[in-house]
Image (cartoon, rainbow, N blue to C red; front, side, top):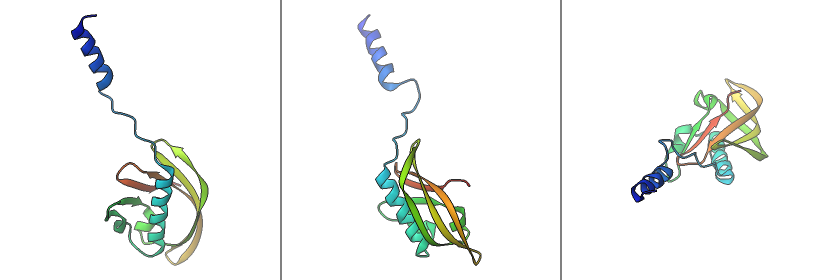
Length: 123
């Protein structure tokens, strides 16, 4: 193999064929801490946008929080599951929705690649 062909081959191997690198799997400890930080903020009456400021912003997406539901209490399961580039956390939640207390089992998907994102899994 000629030297110029060899360098071309090596360049293709290292650069790839136009695809992007697979995302880094989410860190379980960072993910749980981010989820707890967001849930505690919700429980304290803060708005989701408040989490976006600071050194470690969190983009927290929950349609009920956005619509004004209050988080009264929550309990996360001790285990979590890898879910592609995210971690999946399950738990039990008590919400006050339009003046009515509702108990639910919910799951949140957390991505820890910067910026950190938390989104409620569709029910």
